[in-house]
Image (tube, rainbow, N blue to C red; front, side, top):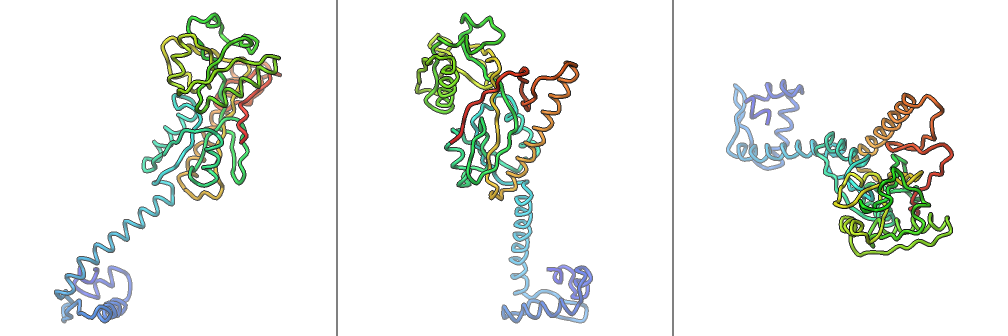
Length: 324
């Protein structure tokens, strides 16, 4: 290509910064291999034969494709392009996960996030089989062959009708819920909410009344609004508003959220996502501690929350047990 462009082996060699003899030898070897003369040599330089012109057209296309392949591979290898497959268990209405995805997409426009909703067991199995790159789950699940990092916490909220007798409360306790009827979805996270209610209300010596419904969360909310029962939800979901439904925090209840991934996963886009998640988690925690110190000069409450609310001193911190 350089010889054809410059019309001379000497000028081509100078442009490529190699010896003229190397240019001449390589072209001669190429001509011998394809069985046709590519150049006519003359005193002033060289010019292409008809065979050379035809060969050059395809050679240029081939070189361009190799160049594009190198660029694409380099972008993917640096995590600047590709797909990152994410299993989610939390709402994207607000909160840490919503902020993480927004910042990640903004910083990595060439990467497409592929989101999959589901429960802990399914997500962990998918991560182990490399069908998902990462899963964001509640609690502290244990997954063989996987790494885990606690990233943020969210408060637990009671979802109740806006005209409910507890609606005037700023905060609701477990004692307030002792004799209440609850409804949950049959799909995730309904089963986890069911187990959460049974566990904590049983500690008060009461077997809760929990009814399952074959609807998703969005259709469960109207049932709450018409008085069919109360339910629980995480802090991030409270950004979504439903007519006739209000949210009230459940005293001293905090859900830890973590990331689960396989250390054998070599997707560079995943590494960039995890790096950003850790940075945001540290930044959020630092901001919380700074704000707490500025507003409360007295001994600070236990700091076990990243990006959420602090729990009072000596208050129990309970979480959904998502162990597989």
